[in-house]
Amino acid sequence: MNTERVSLWALFVLFLRIGSTAFGGFMALIAVVQSHVVERRKWLSHDEILDGLSLATVLPGAIAVNVIAYVGYRLRGLPGALVCTVGVILPAFLLMLALSAAYFTWGQMPAVGRLFMGFLPAVAAVILVAAWNMGRKTIKEVPEALISLIAAALMVWHSSFAVSLSIIVMSGAAGWLIFREKRVAGNSNSSGESKNTGRLLSVSAAPLALASPFWSVNTIMLLKLFTTFAGMSLFLFGGGYVFIPLMQHTVVESTGWLTRQEFVDAIAMSQITPGPIVVSTVFIGYKVAGLPGALVATIGIFLPPGILMLIGTHVMNRIKQSVLIKAVLRGIRPAIIGMIISAVIAVGMTAQQNWVSLLIFAAALLAQLKFKVDVVWVIPIAGLAGLLMY
Image 1 (tube, helix red, strand yellow):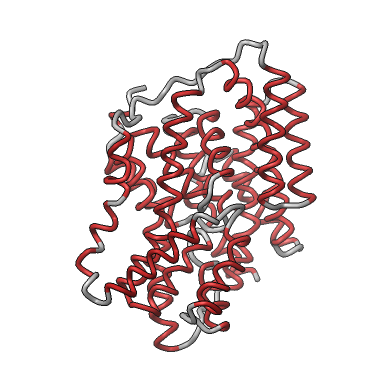
Image 2: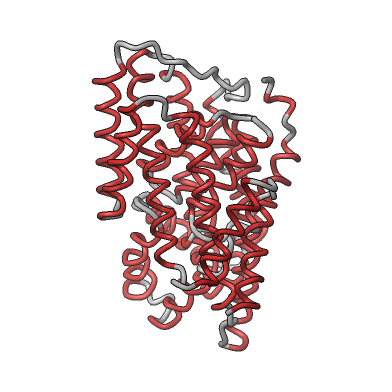
């Protein structure tokens, strides 16, 4: 298909909608993206999404945000990556900004426990449907099924970046050994791929230009916020929870920007926003330097990993037609599906173990599989059900 027909405005609006309801962790967000981009609009294939997820897993940064940058880049090059990323982050940024302002004004947290009791079983259902849709089109032979099952078992046994990286490496090696002599169907490159990689830094740095009117507030402090979070972002491997100790050491013990209680509250607030846990940088930046600080800290945490992801995507687009790379990717894709299945189990175990959760889970499955309800509505409705039933 000609991806130039996908307008930047359409991409921004779609990912703004997705970002407004992306509760439940990065796998839930990726499941929603897969539903819209692959199942409904057919802008990318299942294999292309899995390739982006495998790349995001081994690079630093928030995995879901990196996958979305990958999707935008494949569809409309650097401008597409920028508008998709901004669209999906903006709702969480604005909500976290409002919560931070309320916190420092009244010192109170919103009571949302019951709402999230309803979210979790629905999130598990959304991820399960995504795994099913991907798996039935990707897993075609017994070796692929075995790779998927082993990956799921390893992630259930011990979910960490080291295990995730080991799964990617081992499944890629298995793909090379098993599939290298077989004819592997290739994916056509998206016509939206950038032809001038020299534009990468200038386009990716555009958000910093938008922040320029604020630099007069406290240039030194804003620069320190940006460099601190940009530096930390390069160590963000394995998901936001792994990142918490480093962030706490930096903003509580090293810089003294937050008290220990404020840091705990910042992490708690990030859990009630539709975005990654690292959106807690909004809270930190807001306390240190108000709105400009929140903006600069957020840019700092997302920009460097985003640049690395786009470079990795560009390289992958160039080499993936190699017979060797095709075999490696054919091994990695079922492993990624196994990792997604393990996320269903992890989220399900986090939910309340009672009949209400089971009912919400079953209703969310039925809504997606039988009635084809847009997943953007499934999770919010489940949250309201939890609010009423718990």
